[in-house]
Image (cartoon, rainbow, N blue to C red; front, top):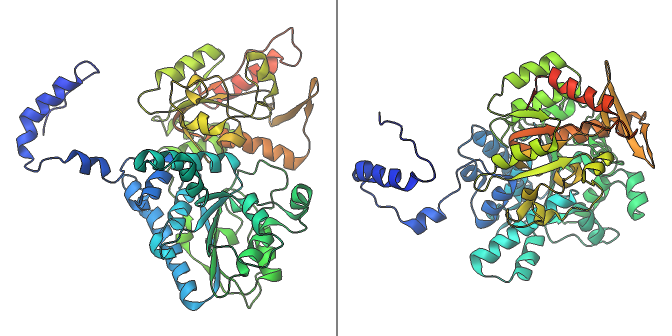
Length: 503
């Protein structure tokens, strides 16, 4: 076995030359730099990197081969594509419901399906998401990448990318109330459980039907075959009017019984990460419904540590302190630290900024008193620049000046995050005190749906890092009754009890 050689920034070149001199002759094949540069992408990618690779023509197996979850992801993608091919052959409508644990790669699977050129005979399907920041960031990343690779004008690259990834509300707006079908026969609906119910659809756009019903109606206009791939997550509902999984079942049972359903078995038990939501209360007998275990992604892919971290976060938010400590101890490779000093948190992040690893601040949209520290969560984030620009750009996440809220970062990720925890979520002796800042004071939130949304906000924020997280809990200010020190101390004490070490 060859010895391990160590190198730092100043000695790396000489150590590499020494290694080539000693071992280079053992490899008779010379390296073609251009071929090497064009070769498949092997590290576990971020969703932005994965989207770029798929857009360039690689497949989901090639860009995730290094991870144990690659086989699971490839099997799921293949099962969905096979089902769509069968629906095309048999001239029937199909809806697939694909589930997965947090970070399992549902979005990646959806992008792969949309970009399967052999499936669409040369034309792309469309990836739809109600997550505006995700659509903006991925579309801009694809456009910039194509512009750099092919010298295509950026405006044209942006137009091309916009046909690949679209905002679901704009897609519906373009086709609602019309009789002709859309140009694509396959659509992927990301976070389908977050589609709007009838009340929210009516309030926002004066449409008297829920988004699941509208989407099924639009795709049902196709003569012959059409397919919808609904990606279903859990614990991510953070907005008023999100219909849940049952609305898809009601629309299918009431109006679209001609559609075949292929779904994860989990959706018939209400056992999706503790969710009681089910696809059907009872499916009509004449509907063709098939359950397939391949429709569930049960291995976390975001990083090899994501699944353990997700378990820790679940225990932390459900007040299971002992289980949280054990879960955190089980993932020592994923550091989660806490500090009461903002400068310390920023320095911790900056020390971890190496190469292309991305750092950034995140905070709940309810963290209104972070403003006292110069962090205003109400400021609209320029998400494309925040996520994509390099460390020389003051608008980028690297500058650690503007936090992304749960609305800006949901569905996306950073390598290292700094979570700024405010008084909208404060632990009590046995529960959470959930509050909203109105005017000049904090008000207690008692509505169960709104309480669940706040918990889910922190679930989103606590699972956005690929490598590690530092949590900053302010000290508070005795002279400012909107920032009581006792409440911030309670947060810090609870995080310590859950096993998070203080810097």
